[in-house]
Each structure stands twice: as structure tokens, then as C-alpha cells.
Amino acid sequence: MTFDFAPLFPAGLPAPAVKWTGAPRYNFTGGNNNADQVPVEGLIAAADAVLRREGRTLATYGLASGPQGYRPLRQFLAAKLKHDAGISCSFDEILIVSGSLQALDLVNGALLARGDTVITEEDTYQGALTRLARLGVNAVGIPLDRDGMRMDALAARLANLQRHDIRPKYIYTIPTVQNPTGTIMPEQRRIELLKLSEEYGVPIFEDDCYADLTWEGLRPPALYAMSKTGGVIHIGSFSKSIAPALRVGYVVAGWQILSRLLALKTDGGSGALEQMVLAEFCEAHFIEHLPKLRRSLRGRLEVLMETLNEQFGTAAEFDAPKGGIFLWVKLPNAVDTLKLFQSALAAGVAINPGPEWSTDGDGRKNRMRLCFANPSQEEIRSGVTTLAQVCRTAFGVPSRIANVD
Ligand SMILES: Cc1ncc(COP(=O)(O)O)c(C=O)c1O
Image (cartoon, rainbow, N blue to C red; front, side):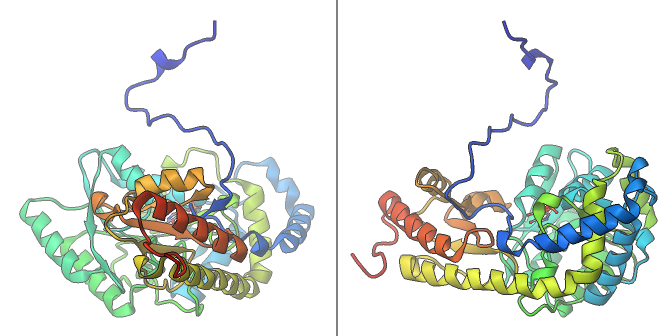
């Protein structure tokens, strides 16, 4: 008889994970990146150099850099954030974490209790929403337009919550290449957001993990850089600029917050090899690596939009994202993407159904998010063609495919 652990599980555990059965043939899900653009040779050279020079520091937890992470990586980040995002911070205001997902957990751990309220964009990162749901925290979604979170709607919502004596714990935003909408919040709107945050005493939680992937390589200053009060926590990641499997992200915050996050980060430090290799690679090559990555992603996006237009015609509506790796697609109301997800998967095509990426779950039944970074241009063409066939069989949409009845 095999031992049964089930009676030992405490109440409130998340539902068990589903066993991985292999990658789908056409994978438009998740935040995966372009395999051809992982700078493999550069990483090999960096690993060789840094290990020969400093490998012995692996003998101590936290290398010789302390619990906030490998110091040269934090120094690289401080210089990069100054240059790209206008953030003036010392390496001491940076905490290296195991992917920005860990940053979400740490910030939530420091600020949230069951029953709290937070503000998010109405369409937002599923990983943020599932965490909030698990913590019993109420996520209030603010509608977006082509410039990101709408400030008129935020102002009205904050005023309404205040009338009910509710002070949200934070405003979570992805202002620079929003997930899933691909919008960039302009500087003027950032000023308005900071003003509302100060007026209502609600800090901003700025998730900037796609900020390196704007098509032109330019971006507005980070909210963290623009704040005059220090009421912003900024997080970022190397997942989208180098590779997600490395699991290296970071938090920029004042010591009052960092000291709390550090106390909650009980894993003995994030993986040291990744940090060392990244620091060594990025110092010399990050700047030349990015334009190639952006070009390749934009090329794949063009193919995706072209194929959607060809296969779905007017049935697929979307705004071209201003960077990043996702296209947020609206289909006719007849389509339920939770069901489309199942039939498409059976045909080898994986998509992200809209309801999982919104505080307005039901209202996004006819939306889907497509990640275009990982499939090749050929796979994008074939995958979308198959998706259109599946969608037509299941929902009669599109009524014509590639102009053929
Ligand atoms: C908005 C956002 N934040 C955070 C993450 C987590 O990224 P990672 O933990 O790989 O840094 C993702 C991943 O897709 C994301 O889209």
C-alpha cells in the first residue's frame, strides 16, 4: 500500500498542479522568449571568465556580496536604471530576487493581509491576479485605453473607495509595455498617477519587466524615478531581455521596504551562478544584445498580425502593441476563449484565454492573449491557420477563412 499524504495537507493549500505532458506544437502562451536570441556564446564566455576569477566565492551564502545579491549585478543595474529609466539609486537600494515573481510574493508578503484591497489595471498579469486571489485580497480593476491605466477612472475609484473607508494597499501597474495590452503610459499620465497616489496615500507597485522591449528602445522615465516622495516600489527582470529560465529579477525600493522584503526572503539568496554570469555578460554586451532581440520580436509580431488578418479577417481585432511579446486579441462575442483554449490545445495550439488576464473575467470571454516571442515565423503562420480552423468549427467564427467560404 502506498502512503497517503492527503490527510496531512493543511486547509487552504492551492489546488494541486497538473502534470506537464510536454510542450504544445504551437505555443502562444506564457512569457517565453525567442530561443534564437538567447546569447548563448556570450553567456558561455561570461561563465568561463567569472568562474575562473571568482568561483571560490561560491563557498559562502550570498557570495562575497551579502544577502541583497551579487554586487556587480546590482552595480550594473544601478547604472542601467539610471541610463534607461532615469532612476537614481545606489546598488544598495536593489535586491536581487528569483525572478520578479518572487518580488511579487515578497511585496505582497510585506504589505497585504486577507481582506485588503489593491488596485490593478483591469486587464493585467495573471500571475499577479492569482496571487491576490490566493491571499484573499480584493483586486479592483481600472480600465485601460491606448495609453494604459485611465486616470479619470482611477480618480473616481479612489474617491469611491475612500467614501467607503477603504484605503487600497497599492496600485499595481505595468506602465511600460503593459501585459497583456502592450500599451505604454506617457509621461504626463505618469505625473497624474503619482499625484493621485500621493493624494490618497496609496503607494505604487511598478512592474517594469517589459521595459527593455519597446520597439524604438525608448521609454518614459520610471514612476520610481519621477516620485518625489519615495512611494513607489519598482521591480524588473532579466526574463524578457535575456532568458526567463535564468530566474533573475530585482526590486528597487527604499530601506524601509527592502529590509522587510529581505526578512521575508528566506531562501538563502537567489541562484549565484545566474547572477554572476548575467553581471559579466551584461556589463559588456547588454546594450548590443537588445536591438537584435527587439528586431526579431517585432518581425514575429508583424507575421502574427498579418496572419490573423488573413485567417480571421475582421473577426480578430487588436491594437498593435508598442513593444513586448504579447498581442491582446478581441474576437466576436460568440467565441468563448476558455472553450477555444481546449479545442485548440487538442489541435496542438496553445493560447491564453482572456478571462485569466482580467479582473473582469466574464467580460473577457472573447479575448485571447497570444505570445509571439517563442514560435518561429513559420510556426506562427501554421499555428494561427490551425487556430482559425478550430475556431470556425467550434464557433462559426471566422465565417470565411483567407477569403474562402
Ligand atoms: C507583468 C509580469 N510581471 C512579472 C512576471 C514574472 O516574470 P519573472 O518571474 O520571470 O521575472 C511576468 C512574466 O511573464 C510578467 O508578465
